[in-house]
Image 1 (tube, rainbow, N blue to C red):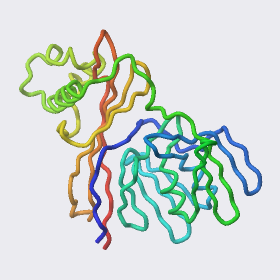
Image 2 (image 1 turned 30 degrees about the horizontal axis):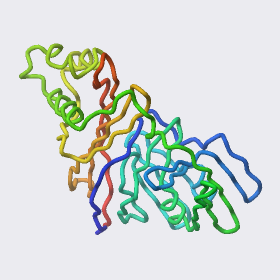
Image 3 (image 1 turned 60 degrees about the vertical axis):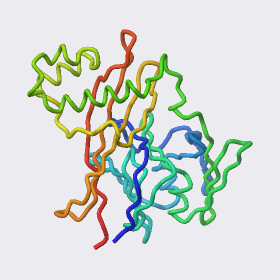
Length: 272
């Protein structure tokens, strides 16, 4: 049985994503340099596909459950976009920070992915650069400002975050709400309210505001809030399940409102 690590705050990301390698890079036969690294919260993150493939691994992406699979010889790595829990050869590990996607590039902690694939990692603080070395190969990753450092017009208070989460939970069951449009008008955009009325509520389970979550500002008037909920063991598949909910927010008419919400369940298989 794997060791089960606790889940902390999530760093998640966009539903529309890809795992394509970054375009701003140069390479020789065994030396590579790219400008798509990110320094955030005292951690360095690198593009997963580019770094993994240059270290001799294969990378696959499962769109349905947002899972990244990395394989090199006898090493198999699995992680879910937005989660701080990964598996290496079916053993659960807790990451320093979660993977996320930005402009079509998926980022993972540099030290985790590199060392899991047998490489050595060092950071040159003065040059703001990460160096990855493995079997004569050298990858230099220049770091840039993290997307979460965008300065929004107005940050969302914790009270507002909790209020919007609670309103989304109410939207999972509209049976007791007589005037849906009036009830949610101050908290949801017209686009989301129209979707609620058409679909007769949100099609996913409620997640309490007390659960783990993080917020990322994606623009001056846009943000993404990601929640997670431990669903426990699914005995049918012998896997631990985690429910993720992505909440997309916009700043309009002087307040933050929910514009879209979606969710998915991730499964972490247990050792047999």
